[in-house]
Length: 356
Ligand code: GLV
Ligand code: MG
Image (cartoon, rainbow, N blue to C red; front, side):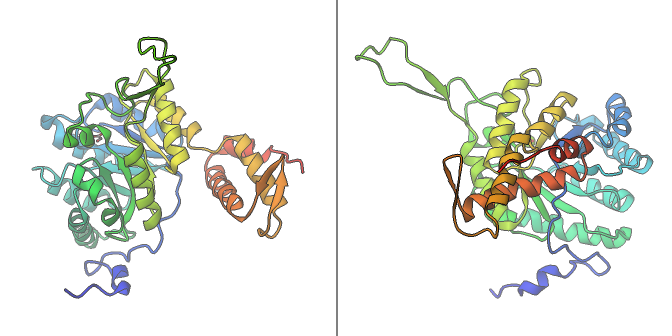
């Protein structure tokens, strides 16, 4: 088989569709807040949330009852048409590609509100063929609806085959914006023996060796992270493709402490954001996925001390060189992107004074 020429990846897939982007802009997306557009109470709160969260996502898939699927789709059209989203992104999660609803989800949303929709989240992605299908269909619908800029695609990593194919998925189209972990569906698909939506499990642990052979004595137990392997694999695939990785849902809304831990692990491993299933989780995500004042203070000190960026210096007894500088620049650049849309953060970062 002959391969597509590299330059053709940037040709629209339908006559009249907007040209694909060459780079996915680093738009802040610390919390992707899910709402059910068929739920009038939730829908009514959406306009007031603009500006308080980086991404609002109208969910059409799981958690929306089959009887409400059409109301959710129509509700999202209504909300999108009547709301000015300002700096907040509008995303949707469409139904899965094998469902009876997805074709009409895409036709309706792209032709009616395509210019307001930033990203389409595709659930249960198995391989690059799923992305190719959505890619072409989006182009056809963008052309039909006169959409001016390309709608991006976000895949949920929630099937074993999807995890096996994550690199190919990440590289499947210039529309690929990012990938989220879908721990609930992924657990079911892999036949993991958990019953939770994200987070740890007390049974998944490592135990300290017995002291003096006393196996029943006091032995410290450390819970391990069920999601470490998948998140690390997803982060590498996204970094390779120049797109963005995300945690996903954390179902225990009351356990704000464990949610924060899971989100922070994901942040430290390279993720840029997470899902929010309740307004409480927006605050956690905004905090955790923004570099701390201490991190930025240290990062700016290293940047200053490193001058032209080569060689090595000692700061507080620690060696800093080109590579640690690059890590610091990741944080400094992220802080700048976030400060541009978050005045409170800007104030915090601007107030940082660095000593030599
Ligand atoms: C999300 O969709 C999940 O299945 O965890
Ligand atoms: Mg799912």
